[in-house]
Amino acid sequence: MLIDIHRHYSRDEGDLERYMERAASIGVEKVGMSTCGPLFGQFDNEGVVRARALYPEQIIGFGYVRLGIDGPETVDHLHALGFEALKMIIPRVAYDDRSLLPIYQRAEALGMPCNIHCGILGRLRGEAGHDVAMSRMRPVTLDLPLRYCPDLKILMPHLGQPWYEEAWMMLATWDNLYWDLSSVILKRSTAFLRELLLGWGEEVWERVSRRLCFCSDTSDPVMMRDAYEKLLDAMDADDELRASVWHGAAERLMAVE
Image (cartoon, rainbow, N blue to C red; front, side, top):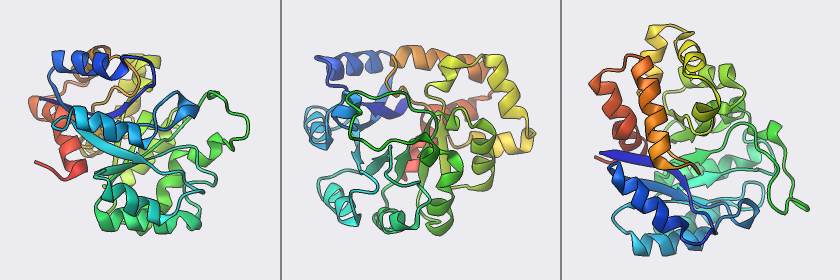
């Protein structure tokens, strides 16, 4: 069984159907689906609602919240629509700006985990008029929601690329911070990642690895499964860790069995 906890819904014709077919071929039973709107070439939240109507048993909905624009009432609205979790990216202020705390607190109260983009972000489609700054999305800026919302679970994608050490320190510090290797696992060598992940010692790796989640993001799910498998082999992962990566960590993130 696999859970693909971080997937985007592109506006490209047939994207959803192609993805679901490829995902099914490797045993993906659940997918955490989010969309961040036309700026990313994706549908909006209503697109995820429509996708869930087509695949109600497979899709876990991550509703997009525009930090610095939306308020905590948006969290309530998305929850009422049936979204189980939230997606956040390109905030108008840094993730640790205290004006955002009511949003994090509302998500915590409703039991909605947050997938919060961390790391580099390239030029977007039609970016003119949008306030984008990568410095607002560094891993350390997750300190505010993690520190003040101890029951809020956060997924940090991309291992904070390129701020890997910063991301790793955050993971070693906060037990409610989960992570995935989207993008970075396709850009850096297995040897580089192995050295990075073991750099703080076996004890830290053992703790942090239990929160590593499988995901495809915008890549082919079969290719991502193979990339994760290659890294797990290099890490000498046992069956328990593999099961955790393929589905267990995502189940703990979402508080489901």
